[in-house]
Amino acid sequence: MAPTTEHDQSARPSTLLITGGAGYIGSHTCVALQAAGYRLVVLDNFCNSQPETLDRVERISGQRLTAVHGDVRDRALLDRVLSEQAIAGVIHFAGLKAVGESSEKPLDYYENNVAGSVTLLQAMQAAGVKTLVFSSSATVYGMPQFLPYTEAHPLAPVNPYGRTKLMVEDMLRDLQQADAAWRIAILRYFNPVGAHPSGLIGEDPQGIPNNLMPFIAQVAGGRRAFLNIWGNDYDTPDGTGVRDYIHVDDLAAGHVAALQHLQRGAGSVTLNLGSGVGHSVLEVAQAFEAACGRPIARQFAPRRAGDLPAFWADSSLAQQVLGWRAASSLTQMCEDTWRFQRGLQTAS
Ligand code: NAD
Ligand code: UDP
Image 1 (cartoon, protein in one colour):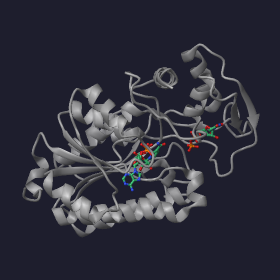
Image 2 (cartoon, protein in one colour):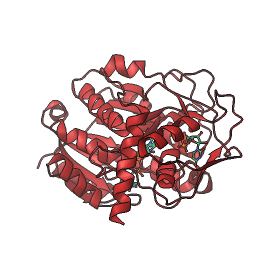
Image 3 (cartoon, helix red, strand yellow):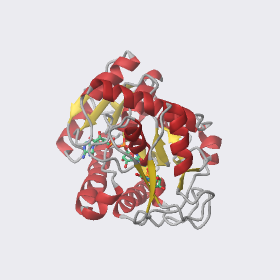
């Protein structure tokens, strides 16, 4: 099959390459993309996911996808996939994402997140595939100089993970500058939580969860005795940390909207994807208690090193440009997380 041409990028229904599509955000986005009529090729090395998740995506959507077990750092594999599958665009989720681990193993993060992105972009350029949605993070902003963060907030990440995201963003801006044919959406996610309402896919971290929502879900399910609340002396309404939680299905819908925007030729964009509302740790624990009908045992503990006190998104640009906004309430996020957690426990 001939390599994809730029003309193909606006053809519909088109085939997309989803790197890291078996992961938490990727799997939910695959469901949303299939519902929107896209054919999918998922490339994943399953370092932080299970192939079975892709079977579940197919079960939810009732549509098949093509799964490729491989690595974004494998240039020969990328060349083959990009030419054989007539790929019109790429959504690049693949990467490592644990903030703490990125300080312990920085080279793994630069290798996977930065070098992996260079290899992917080189392969895309060679194949003439120049439509890309990239998973960035609110972490690129660093210490808030004002809140909510707008896209114009200075970029000063405070950990290696965040710096890998900023490096890839900078690379994408340089690429766009050098070649206007690129259509790039940089999406800065806030705190994705929740699960698909079917309960079939969700977030199932290996080991002890670092993030708040999966940890609370495991306390509710009896897998952990209690929640440590890292700090109750922040300058926030109840003293606990404040974040912008966004339902993963809202985030998935944001990717579909961003991709359609690019395919319309409406220009490259950099957008915050958040709910625009901050919730404290205590508020999340209380909302989860209401959702699961069980108490969430908790205790206050010292602040976690490197944590920011509070941040949330100004997502008005995404609403203006894409006509997208996060619709789900914190209650919905907790209910869907709990349904998925119960399913995990029934299965094990
Ligand atoms: P995840 O770990 O669940 O998914 C990432 C997927 O990529 C996994 O399936 C993993 O096996 C795969 N992968 C990793 N390295 C790979 C490689 N070299 N080649 C092929 N596959 C590889 O993480 P997620 O939460 O779904 O995050 C997806 C993306 O969004 C990541 O880039 C992450 O940095 C970014 N992000 C996540 C969050 C969050 O809180 N979850 C917030 C902001 C940004
Ligand atoms: N948090 C907590 N206990 C935990 C995990 C997280 O109190 O076991 C707090 C954390 O200090 C922060 C909020 O919950 O204020 C969200 O943390 P998470 O790690 O989920 O997101 P991030 O800090 O990366 O935005």
